[in-house]
Length: 242
Image (cartoon, rainbow, N blue to C red; front, top):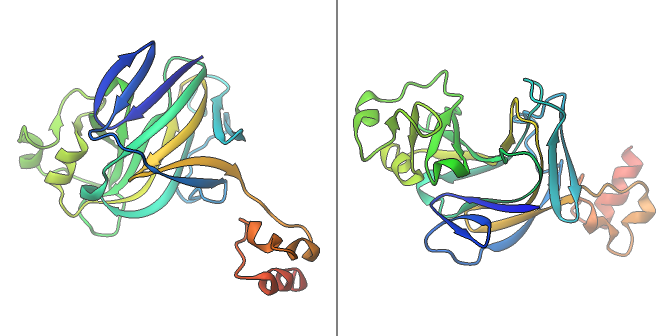
């Protein structure tokens, strides 16, 4: 099996492992994403023949074929200035396939409260991010023509550049969600070992849902992730309400 780390800057090949790393590379803090509770359902684009499952702290993602319904894409809501994003990455293990999941940032480029598209970071483009899903957003021609800012042509899509270039061109741009996408139309099976966003490296865990008020006792209320309770009384009351 091959492990790939997909990040937002320079690429290096070390002992058969493809590493795409940021500069500087320093340890990120640890976090956990509860699945599916921490995924934003309104942004989900996991289709009929795309699947995911939590396995040993990672997230296995796979498709059944190479059609339009073969896609796994999930996102975690945030509210972060693009200019403040300092570290992004996926660490994946290949079970089968040749096109690993890409890192994605949902962005509001002009700060009007609407998502303007998705910045897609893929290993093959070595730190270049292309803008997809931007049907309702028109990129300023002066911005696109400036070589110091996102440019047209190549790089995975017509509009592309480094995160620094995008942030320079759109200083008010906000990341509204971060996530990943496998496909569409890609046959593959991968395990995402971690996803890093803005200095936090997240692993995965299944949501914990309690099934009786007795499970609220002895600190059990605090283990619930779906829903999250304020205290033991809140937990017990939820079963009374139900």
